[in-house]
Image (cartoon, rainbow, N blue to C red; front, top):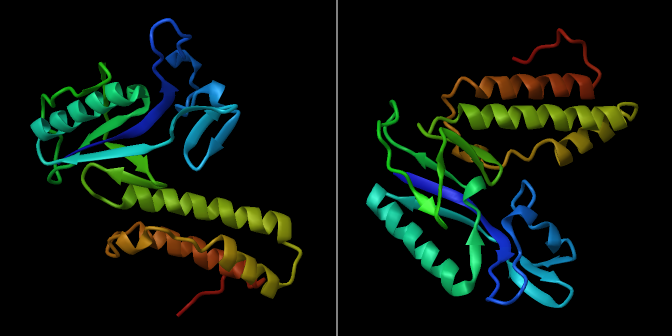
Length: 212
C-alpha cells in the first residue's frame, strides 16, 4: 500500500496582472506568513479577503498507479480551485509486508514537485512506521508522558498527594491511540515503568516500592 500525506499550502494562485503570493512567503509549517491576520474554522483571510482553506490530505492507494491517479486528481483540483499543494513538506510511504522496502519505487509528484519517501512519519500526533510496528509511536508517547509528568511535578510538586494525583489524571493520562497498540510489544513496558515512577513521586513513596 502507498500512503501520501501533507498539508495544502495556504497561498493561492493569482490571476495574471495581480500580485502573486510566492511560495517563499511560507514558513516551515507550510502556513503563509501573510496569513497571520485571521484564521477562522480553517478559512484563511487577510482582512476581509478570503485566501484559502486549511486542510491536511492523506491518500491511500493499493498500487503506485492508483496513487498516481489520485495525485493527478489533486493537481486538477488545485488548478480549478487556485490552490497549491506544498510538496516540500508532504511525504510518501510504502507500507508493505514486514521486510525491506522494494527497490526502484516510483517517483510521485504534486504540483510538479517530487514527494519524498520516508520510513516513518507523524500523523495526527502518532508515528506511522512502514512495517506497521508500534514501537516508534509507543516511545514517542512515552517521551510525551515524561514531559507532562515533569511539568506537573515542577509546578505543583509541593501540593498534597491527592491534588497531584488529580492533576496527573487530568494532564498525564491522555493516551490517545493507545487502543490500537499491539499489547505484545515490549516497548509498552517502558510506558508502564514511567507510570509507576510517577505514582511513587505523586504519593511520596520510597523508590524501592513495587507493585504485585
